[in-house]
Length: 399
Ligand SMILES: Cc1cc2nc3c(=O)[nH]c(=O)nc-3n(C[C@H](O)[C@H](O)[C@H](O)COP(=O)(O)OP(=O)(O)OC[C@H]3O[C@@H](n4cnc5c(N)ncnc54)[C@H](O)[C@@H]3O)c2cc1C
Image (cartoon, rainbow, N blue to C red; front, side, top):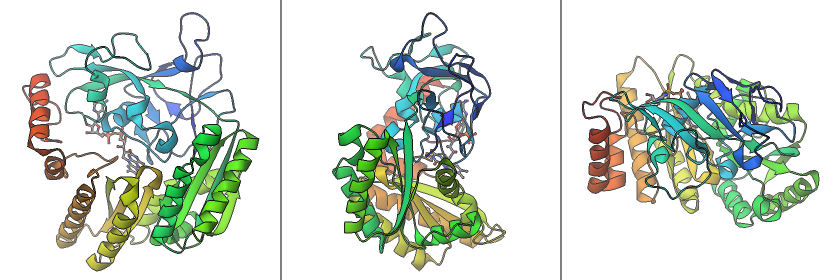
């Protein structure tokens, strides 16, 4: 994982990876407000760059959740985006403190009250939460106040290969159950899963030489001493589950090479069938159900005759399928859509959700109904009708 550095007019340094109208990193009034008040106020055009290879030095502050593609920060709020680091730092949902929203009737709403940036509140309804993930259907987000996190002293990235999907996911579960990062030092394990087809594509695309097998990517943040303990425990757990081809990267260049390979997953998948378009879908299930849905999905992929890869954030129970479609073949597109719908239903049957990151948009409206039920849908429709009675905001999306 790489942390984004923030451009700032503050005394803590300059930002390198976040561009646009980022207004303040620190409280402009008075002395340094301390860790809990570190925040970034960004305007509608501010963008996050996914492939940052730079790590802010310890003592600086960073915006952490980011998706696998470049995106606007307000777009990330609108989709409730997250990334490989959600296990430790949460999703956008956990990192938004306040939003400025233009409502469909033109009024300006500050979801937490003008100028406020508290971490918790029991005051009324959670309007900020309502707009995070609303996919542009309730109002236009024109500014966001986001949490910043302290950059750790050191980071170690690792990859290891497994004989099976089950063994890779079991390792993840055992690492989390053993509370490797949190119990000992309060920092994180960021497991990232790539399937063997994906790994092969990544190797070829990013000119790597990783083992073509189910592979976990892990990253640890903390002090040098704490990292050594985490690394040792993780090796014990993964070796117990049959891991091989261990490699650890502490050096920033090597670490970033691994993660760039992960972030190139989309383009690596596209390179499997030149000329084809990518169709990406995602689901999220309770982590205990992850092995069975991954195994089923892999079997479904084989049976479908489609070309597709699996990549995911196993620590959250979230994974993606990137399917390749010939734009000249409408029948193949129908099969891809049927596959995505079947995957969504499999996730629902396992007490999961039809999307952990990508949202409902137009394609998953039926699955949303199946997920939340009639009363849930009616409540959402009433909220939409109250805020946007003329249906101006992204008509037809989500509901
Ligand atoms: C290769 C690739 C990898 C990806 N990986 C991830 C990932 O790991 N995790 C993840 O969460 N997502 C991922 N995504 C999806 C995408 O990057 C995120 O959904 C991102 O947050 C969208 O931001 P955007 O600025 O591109 O928004 P857009 O795509 O422009 O818009 C997305 C939605 O948000 C609405 N919207 C945008 N801006 C605003 C605004 N200011 N106010 C109100 N509504 C608005 C739009 O109307 C639209 O409905 C990936 C996409 C690609 C192509």
